[in-house]
Image (tube, rainbow, N blue to C red):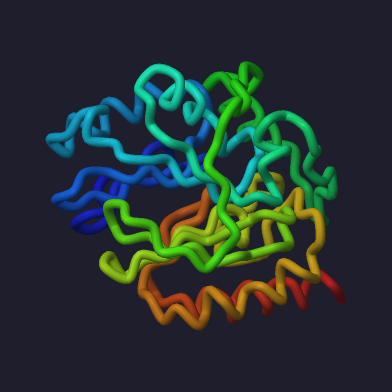
Length: 242
């Protein structure tokens, strides 16, 4: 699905990854679930590209619903995979994510999320065996000119991927625009977050980008500005804390 010239989404509002496309090729941000591999190929074809145009996969963190087809691309095509050093072990199946679910859980959204995840191969995650590590602050020489913003909170090595060329920031689970366990829509804190306080503190780095597009790993794309998205996340966090 093309969101704007140069940005395409693979997957849907339940689980999503993104393609950054320019004349140098394609950068994939996050790798969804294993079964999204076929969706990736279809999305590339629709854009007039192929797997040979993919230059790298950049992971916003090491959780299984973001690892998806990353190791397959590395193993079968030699495509490098980048992950923050603090999440490298998680991406290899080591450190485990938080089990904090938050409040207001509703049965139907939970069933929908887990049914979709299983249907897309979420139970068959192929962990990373090799990855290039990031520290934060890098600007990678890749399509979309991605800049790496450290976003500790959801996980120790969570990052956001900023593309000033495309007026967008790809935030993984630093926030969500559709809570997979409650069904609530709009910018808000993501579930399964290791350190919610750190996650909220990190949000200033997203607001400071000033870009129009905020693209999460779960939820609908947001194009009403980074600062407004962050304001609404904090408002939602304050409301649930009462």
